[in-house]
Length: 461
Image (tube, rainbow, N blue to C red; front, top):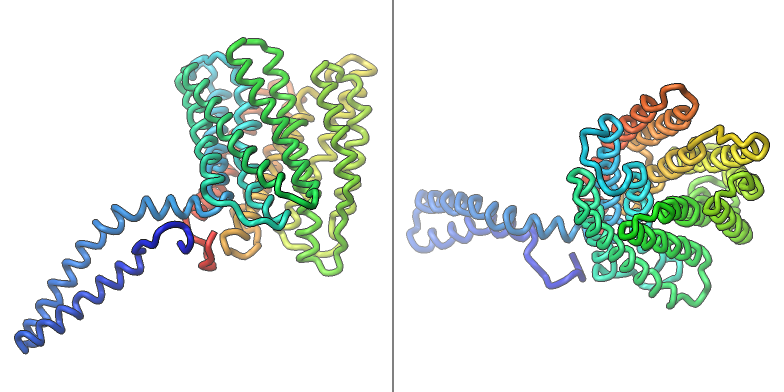
């Protein structure tokens, strides 16, 4: 790659040398003997030697280096690779646990809490850092960041997730602690990188400030989990899970949607007027924080006071953003996925109001999973597909694999929500987990294949 280190001989150079060597041998043989027969024989020998030499020098020695260079050529490549790998690995472990809890070692942390921690603080943040490290400099008109900025983030996130998942299969408390420490290191590196970009910003890019603030709240939750591992205080684990939903994930998703969805639509829908007033983003932050505070003090009967306005703002955004004419599939899935937000907030508000009048927790965890699987899962497929297609030099098209994953996630979300209202919910939970694996597997496989290959248009990055 140009500008990515000292020059080295790539695959094309080796092929050229292998093809040129017989010609040089033929020329020398003709000069020395004048015999065409001998020259032909020498040509065959030289070509055979060149073919035998090429795999040893190229495939064995160069291929790992080429893959590493390709994977680290852009922040989204490396960190999306980490997230995509572990979204399957984490759900594979969770599915196995749902199928046979006794078949896996009992860890020091309840499996449900680990499920929430891994997805909220390891899997999805890998995608967040990959996206934000890519777009922060662009939003602010600053130079792009180098490998030295984002590779440490990827290493920390990758090793942290591998160690934590290994602890779930082995029951090792040491691996779990090491995994959390490595995750903290990866987060800290990511925050340092994004913070340094923010400090150079001279135009107050509010979307960047909003996203960074959410990551700071998430980092506080991550540190709380580390303290919980050492103290065993279950109240800290509760704080970790709640901070992850309304302090980290929802603010990041909503911030990116507010900035990018109208921009995407304006690029492909004729006559579309982008609508993204900053007051809309500013109005949601106190509501998110109030919802979070009420949950932390178990004030669920009062959540409707903030969840009704959050529903209204989400519904207003969807109505104003949705194009009134034909749109490509890659754009449509963004708005269909976002439609889960007003539905989830309506469920939260309804549950709170019902508790206010009856004291019953009637909807169970249906609102949580409408938000986490419906919104977060659907938009993960939609947004990552768009970034992957565009930044790999491919057409901005949804494609059958991504469409299958997106439609499948709608079914998975419905299964998990309905599971809260049936007599035997475990069967529904298992079906939702298996469905997640089924619909994500081809999408993840295709994405990983793209991240390990150079851009289709021949450009760097």
